[in-house]
Image (cartoon, rainbow, N blue to C red):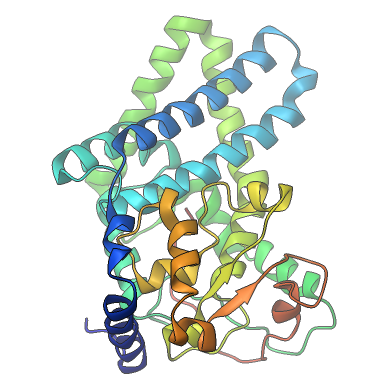
Length: 324
């Protein structure tokens, strides 16, 4: 599928301006494989450690464990995204091998299907019924942004995607879904051999419960930050950058993935250089004139929640999406 005319025009004009004004942008494409390896190890350590605290210390720590596990699932989703763009390791085979071993199945995801559908998101950006990440606007006006958020959080389709990932996606080949289940069987066997049946059971149970709650709540916030409440048709009109700081950014966007407009303009930039890319892009007249930027999540004039409240009513139907 070819890029939509407006999307294609935006990207071509932006890249032309970037090459003219900021030739140093090539440095932004440099990969740091050790950073990716460290971040994968960190997420695994937090998840496994959280389960261990619940099993071996106190079940009263379950709420804390769910918050930590759901947050690192969200962070692993960011790594899966970069793996889909082959931005973790430059060698395609290594990139995909590590992702299939340590990232994708942990999220009940099939890398091949994720890559195909995410590519479609870039090509069909904002096209209702085609863009797999398209979130439909409300059928009637809302009085508060929480109405928009809760409407999406409680959509059965989106919640099931958060809970079961590609295991509930009929578009994924049965053999690939079986591979995810086989991977989990192996991981649970290893977990049981190390920590006993209670640890293995807690790993599975807390993983599912975190995905159904904390992960889903965070993912809906992240999805809405990307495009919700904006006008489809062009990259600049339908994507935004969240240039926030502080604790809220660390919670909602743990790996710089709030710079979503920046990502759509130059998808090859790895997650740990998106902030640098955003700073560089602000030197460009096209970006300064047209970029949608929010500097807060919920409060203040520049808060993204204002756009969620103002989302235009419509009856556009979403494509079957994926939540990672």
